[in-house]
Amino acid sequence: MNTPPKANTLKVILAATDFSAAAERALERAVQLVKAHNARLDLVHTFDAAPVMPAWGDPGGGAWIGEKMFMDGVRDQLERVRASLAGDHGIEINANLEVGPAHRQIARHAAASNADLVVIGASGSSGLVQRLLGSTAQNVVRSSHVPVLVVRLPGNNAYTNTVAATDFSDDALAAAQMALQLAPASNLHVLHAFESIFDNDLARVAMQHDELERMQIRDRDHAVEQLDDMRRILREANAQAKLHTILRDGNPDQQIDAFVGEVNGELLALGAHGKTRWEAGLLGSTTQHAVSHAPCDVLVWRRPAAD
Image (cartoon, rainbow, N blue to C red; front, side, top):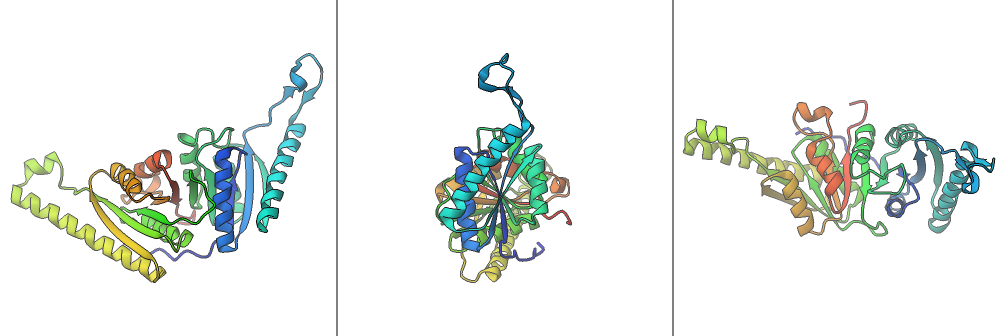
């Protein structure tokens, strides 16, 4: 396991909003993090295309609401949100209106603003995130070379219980480091779901029982060593961190779901990429599952574009 560079202090947080209740929760969390890190908040609202519709519901009336009128109305709504948050919390906020596919515009704006984190709601009522439990959230994570925080829970208070799921990849370590950065005072549970490569029908047929058992024990001992290494690296990043390492046997999706429930986890951190070469260019299946199904907020660490 290589040691990724330690995360810098958050300077710019980008929060996407579609003015829904879910987006409000995401803005709550973004504001909490902005205040904790003395960062700047960028708001972005995006839609695929401005509708052109008859005014007052009268197709024959001759009065039509065009793109400019629609965008002016949305821009005013976005400005009201910006002004309200800035006034209530005394923080610096920029607001931006973008036209185009949500995941592309969010990724583009995150790169242009040098954002350190993208914050987005887990569901919504408009084009921005209405399918977030399906393809949109995964597209945002795939497209953004900035870590993405998918918010499900109210965000007024700092996280107190976080879970970092690890497959011992560099991405998983970076995700745990960022979770520690976002919630330095929380309990951080570093979880590895252990599945030996020798625990399968082919190995059971090809190997003697004693040899098979020996190899499975070797795999498990190696996993324990890697957990210890990860704990050491995280301790170096924050000597006061409240760290816990956990090894569970079984399917990662099932074990992560169960453990988050057991500890009332509020934040689950994962890497976007798996450990293997095949998974390196993909959004890992466990991460896809977490984005779609986790009952808590999900932080997905995505390696920078230069990598």
